[in-house]
Length: 388
Image 1 (spheres, rainbow, N blue to C red):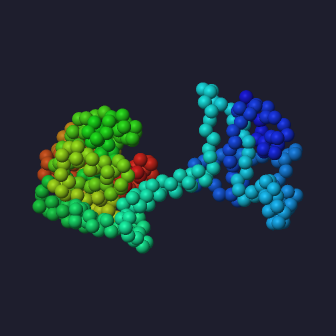
Image 2 (image 1 turned 180 degrees about the horizontal axis):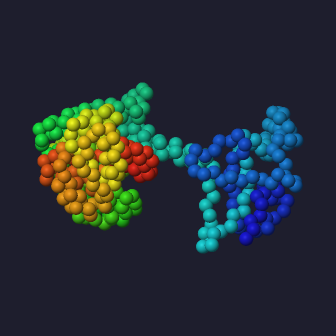
Image 3 (image 1 turned 90 degrees about the horizontal axis):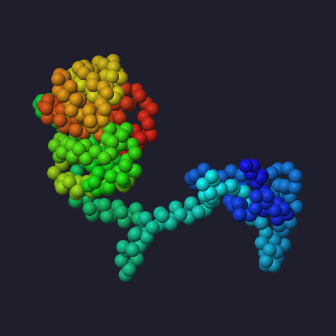
């Protein structure tokens, strides 16, 4: 079906639309120089340039150049055209095959107003409801009140080990031949743990569409139970700092659901793998030691490290998710090594804990830092997102 050309409202007055008014919708399209919506793809439309169509400005614009004449016309009930505002075009839109009318994107003012309302409701309104009504606190911004509140809550906080402190613990375990497992929790691990404990399976499936990539096919309650048991036994646990819903907030909900007391755990940040690498501490741990590498990039990582003089004694690739944990741990236990770097998605948590306990060695959940060191510099969108 041919859709008629877009016509301005001025043109629409002179002749009826060939497809009828019922199929027409009005959309605001930014004029030249007007502000565009901050996000979303703007609807682009252009009035015909030929025939009776006339460019903005010309005689009508010059007539409104006289401020007094413009004011008289406004008082008489005829508002002059707003040359700085957005042009209004009438765009014929056909219903889709199912009979549903397509949604026409609104202009940026709706978005900006919604953003301001959300910002107020999420910050200033909460502050307004909590400020005492009998005093006026000068310059009480959300930031200053939050800062004061965090200082008041600091005594309730649990320490997170720095990269240097984490390195010292790992170095001590390596020097003394003690088992040590460093694991990390991100949204993948937390959504796995949330199955039927914090969130219904349907929600986990919807919000965790990346979980099969990370090695878990939901529902998998066995993977959930193995994961929570591994967390209880890990030597050091990296936890997320992000306050997004499926990171730190979900972390505490999961711990409560399984009766885990966080003060009983040794904690660091979930991106400790990057911190150790950026500060040159991983290289110090690798120097002079036998290294085992486990994961889907084990071979390229082994080749890269070997070219730098690192003693690689084994590389296990691939790891097919949590269903492959037993095979990987069994195969790794037959290798001779001092330190294992494990990059295997959600399965890495359990592999590190079991391998350290079975062999008495050190195992680190190395994550996507393996890709970086191996020279695989184009991780997927989810890989970048997981390392918050």
